[in-house]
Amino acid sequence: MMLSGPRRPPASGGKPKGLVIALHGYGSNGDDLIGLAPYWERLLPDVQFSAPHAITPLPGFAGAHQWFPIESMDPSHLAEGARTAAPILEAFIQAEMARFEVGPRQTALVGFSQGTMMALQVGLSASSAFAGILGYSGGLVGNPKLASKPEIQLVHGDEDPTVPLAASQMTQDFLRAAGIGVNLHISPRTGHTIALDGLQVGGAFLARVLKPDPS
Image (cartoon, rainbow, N blue to C red; front, top):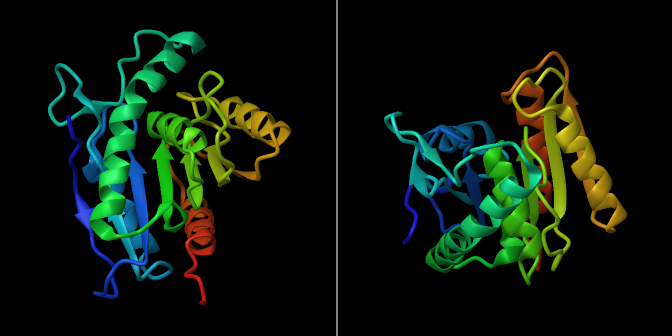
């Protein structure tokens, strides 16, 4: 199967010089994450945004999708779900890069919650490093193959009742031990959502890692 979802072209009106793939959380859809693009377009005027709907609909909830079913929060279950879903997401990313004629070094992955799990799973196992991974309110599940070392920015609310802040803290510790550049921004008085300070940190990170090559 091939994923689909909303796209937003570069604000400059020109040919894309970069690509952001935005991966929504459990029970949401691509229309949610494509809504981040207007906040970042001023910093990323030449960047194409794509936000696929996750792989399967969530039964009983109109318009809701999931990257993989969450029947328990057992780490082995989550890790297996992410591994199973990864090839479908990888195919979408490859197709989008081909469509817009950009390579991995001009592509960043953004995730929220379950989407962050997928961004880390796919981004760290890619043979060619992406420009960066921006992960909101999520974390690593299992021990994915670390085939590349993209720059990583994590953002998490300190009052998140759904995915505890510890998930990002443990992810940061694991990645640093593996020699991967990673920073964690903690949004104060913030639950399972993206606060304004998190948007600003994310935008600055994307602008830096997707900065066009002066050559």
